[in-house]
Figure 1 (tube, rainbow, N blue to C red):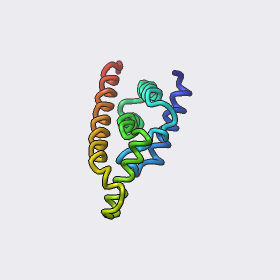
Figure 2 (figure 1 turned 135 degrees about the horizontal axis):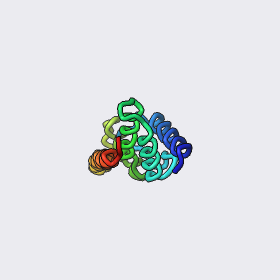
Figure 3 (figure 1 turned 180 degrees about the horizontal axis):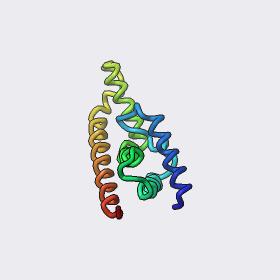
Figure 4 (figure 1 turned 45 degrees about the horizontal axis):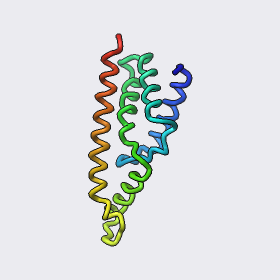
Length: 129
């Protein structure tokens, strides 16, 4: 991957994060500008050329872990229905049947974000200062 491509991928991904900043319970993966593996590679590429003490470096680390927020579109639809039911407290809302799955999805997102943080930390440790 070259620098120009990496920067373009990261810029587009950061724009998606900005647009979806209110969606903390799961974001449809169709919103991603490209495959997660390419986003990871692009962020890692940019990090190798960024000061570890800069705000940009910390922002990129945060963005990397936020890849864990992206779930399948079907899962995101289920999460949205469950949250709608919670917000309305309408016992007839079909979203109530998804509450158990919603809780499981939140655990999965949390676990994925943790694993992504560990993955990135391992990458950073391999880099020479």
